Length: 438
Ligand code: NAP
Ligand code: HSE
Image 1 (spheres, rainbow, N blue to C red):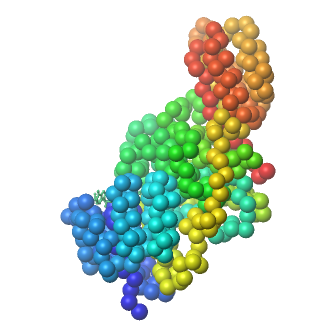
Image 2 (cartoon, rainbow, N blue to C red):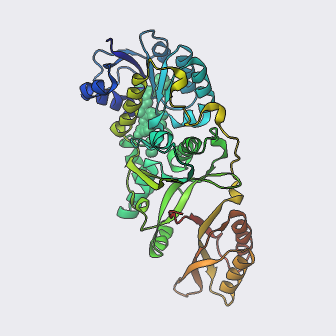
Image 3 (cartoon, rainbow, N blue to C red):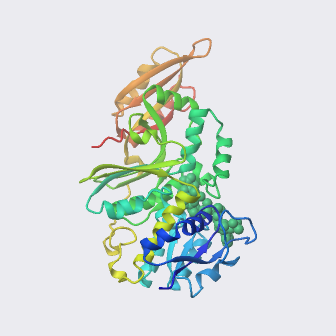
């Protein structure tokens, strides 16, 4: 049988890794797929640039449209990134009857509804395992392995660059900028690294996870997004003293009123496995009603871990090339006509616990004022620390960990606490999740 021909858009970190894995493991991959798989055509901005892979035998072009219109190509693998040119090329590939594999979470989170609908009409597949959590087969796990469950919630460390930065800062006291530069050198970071640092990349990924977990359309614009740039060493140390680690988490939970969609730094108990996921590693905790909590762990970024997911998708597509399009696994896990319009919960209605760091003048009654405001807003305190600082001991840092409350109650309480005369700077608030099984 003729080999299946792949057209590759992009020969950078993931594109180069994909060529290497396909070449190195060609025989095993062919035994799994039932066909040989060959990269026949590839595009890059500059085809004369040195590459991490061998490109002998691959027709190279600087015009990506040549790849998506090549009649010999059956599967287009989009590894350019961004959501403008990539969207145009993917839609063109679909219109030309090509199956598509992509690692592009921005593209899927923002334009997935349009892309899947076009693919559905054309009877082609769009596979995107590498778009979430690098090499971890989390899309397949939720979409297929957990198909018998009602997913209750999921929480994940889903940005490798951010986790790498937080780990290096905590363990080696390195500064933010030098660790970010290293993540860029290692090929972990996005073309625009603010996507990693400000949580946008994690929000893209959470959008995708929530959609396949809860059977809702992709709604990137509704994700509450906060990055890691404001986490200080002081908060990391206080959190540790109280038995918590600060991780940058994406969280989505189904509640009676709607689905929570939020990405932010989060204190989690040190004893949780996920609290010990460090460096570029990612982990996703998924709680299903039947299976209970499950945890998926692996490299979240990098050439070959990501290529592992891309090649897995290519094999999946090759296996079903001749199958009836009506009987394939739906792109978003649920049949397209069965997606629900269940609302996304506004952040003000989200229920979570909090870590508060309060810098106050050491005046009589300040603690009483703070605790009264919290109590008046229905917020109960779980634990507290107080540290005097400054040689004159005239000011103090108060750390409060609360029990779970509603975000809007905390918003109201913080307005009142910040207005107290004795408060020196706005209170630092970091959300806290226990991530227990129930
Ligand atoms: P990259 O190293 O920057 O590679 C991008 C490739 O696309 C390069 O070969 C580049 O050509 C080509 N390209 C860029 N703009 C182009 C344009 N306007 N026209 C034609 N070609 C263009 O990026 P990457 O890290 O491999 O990421 C690719 C995709 O995978 C992104 O969507 C990213 O979010 C996703 N992803 C990355 C990782 C990771 O660990 N890096 C993990 C998971 C998912 P030149 O090489 O000639 O410049
Ligand atoms: N920049 C992304 C990260 C790449 O660091 O997680 C993997 O999606």
